[in-house]
Length: 311
Image (cartoon, rainbow, N blue to C red; front, side, top):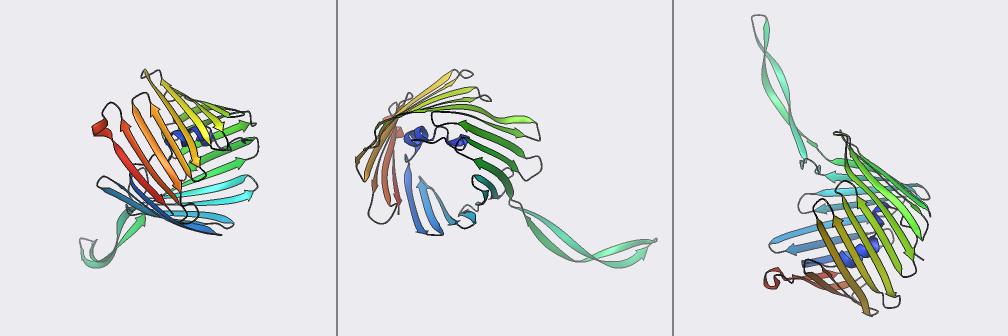
């Protein structure tokens, strides 16, 4: 039986994973080394002429630490502290600061030396100086409380004029409701305001999300057809009355055998995506994924192929 998702962000996780996960473009390679107390993961991604790589370290103890560093000089870290069953404090560090994009603030400490006196006014000759650099990074604190029937999360940035966020999800297996609100304390304006509803019955998971800020309504359905082969259908319908735009996406997945999964999806704009994923015997969690995407309105110009290797 599917349990209530503890946090609002996972209200429609099943549909999003079916419709958007594993559809990579370009070349992706991930290498992971898992041990009992953590893991080290190295990954690289190449799209056209650009290349992105990063390294991630996960340490599990009384405090769960997660550090990620990339070749683009961007570094992030996360610390999770569990005070009691279901209650956690999460500290997230980002360098450089995500808002300003700056990583260092520099200054000069000047050491003066007294010089000649003229008209009862001291003249200083600057004989030495020291340049110092102060790192600028962003810190965010989040409090989480999760039980079988309720999940609450509140976050605040530990900077001047931070963004304060609050989300909650409560209910049982068959019905749960929630909200997600964020406020910019500098302007006292809402940066995010969402309301959601999730229902579950055998083989069906439905969700309804209302984005009050952008006036967008999104409805999704996850239909599990066969449990043994993981055959499922996913539907997503998004409507924006303010822009008079609507988007319909339909996807399907199925396991051909215990080690091979295929999935495909199409939307009302003619974009088609497909992927086949094979679990290899190189090691635990070794996956080989081949995917492709094409717009039926312009097949020759929009065709893309992706290859992802994880071991």
